Amino acid sequence: MSAIQVTSLSKAYGFYRIFEDVSFAIQPGTCFALFGPNGAGKTTLLRILATLQSPSEGQFTIFGQDGVDQRDAVRGILLFIAHGSHLYDELSATENLQFSLALRGQTPETSQLKRALDQTGIGAYGNLKIRQFSAGMKKRLSLAKAILAQPKLLLLDEPYNALDDGGVIITNQLIGDTMNRGGTVVMTTHDRNKAAHIATEGGILQAGQLQLLSPEQLQTHVLS
Amino acid sequence: MSFLSTIHWVVWKDLISEWRTRETISSMLFFALIVILVFSFSFAMDQDAARQLIAGIIWIAFTFTGIIGIGKSFTSELQNDCIESLQMSPVPKGAIYLGKVTANFLFMFAVEILLFPLFVIFFNLEVVEAIGMLFLVFFLATLGLSAVGTLFSALTVQIRAREVMLPVLLLPLAVPVMIAAVEATRGTLNGDPYEFYSQWLHLLVIFDIIFTVISFWLFEFILDA
Image 1: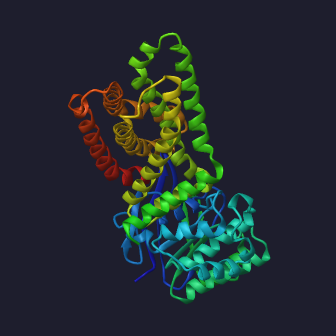
Image 2: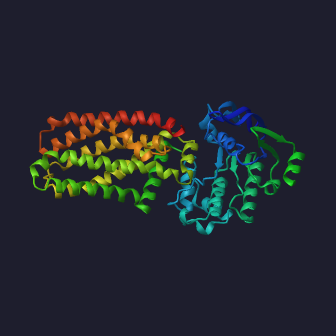
């Protein structure tokens, strides 16, 4: 069973077609990097997979569950780290983790929260309110959420934005750990060099069409 | 995770956020104080007329104050796109709705408890014997307003003119609750026998049930829209 099976997916806003007839399959234990110019529809495709938007046509399944008809089941197995941090400014880092994981039906121990914060390098800031966090620290906190949530499907929209070198290493460690336990990662990125270290599959979304890359093409693409 | 646990976490999050900023409560109190002062000065010369109209004045203050609080309920979810994490949450959306209703109810009811003594002082009301019944009316009417208001807050949060659209959409639906609340409050303050205004209390209970059940059912579709 594919982790993600996308069949003839199209998205349009009125007469403006973002992408058309996109089909691909991603296997468990892989990391799929989605490249493409600005406005190509990478984030839109990711948001559709995250069940935040509906496709105009076509269908997709996530680990065998229909992405439209079985939306709640799909939501239980994915985690989307988006442009917006999904963090509440008035809550501390620890409280944000507690709340966002509670909404996933998880109640981690305090020691687990602390460990995840330490792993992402923000262990000293667990009691600090998010409004005092930098963009990079917010990103690291989102990574801590992913470490605790252990989703089967991890969707990352421009994961390397705002991160320093240490943050990039943590992100790639998270992606590696997700793949090692049979999970799947899909990320959009413009940063081909950083993606080169971790992506196992890839594609270029351009002019409304998805061009899948073979492993050789992927390496050629990221190194070009 | 249980349904009740989700409600608990949503209420916890809203209360703790509000406690740290006091943005909603302070704007609600400020608006209500202005309403009380304006009406108080308007009727300064005619206390009898004031007592005739006090039930309406109370519910104008409570309802519009409540709309301020309810409006902020979902706009706070727009910061950092937090509303998306509510949408993507695999827990029953009805639990999120009930958590939001509970938080809104607590904000409104707290403000009403703080404001009511000012009505008593400014309008020279005698409420000692009626206080229990009055708070029952406040409780039931506030629950109805919170139930329907929370739904419309979610409905209008993504609209650009949400501050305008929320009262425009909410008030027509809230009118039956307001009328029943005014009549029950008037009966209680006048010292009428319970039988004289009990039908308004029953109406409030019916509205509370209808609004909560329908809003609970619709919330999932509205949040995902």
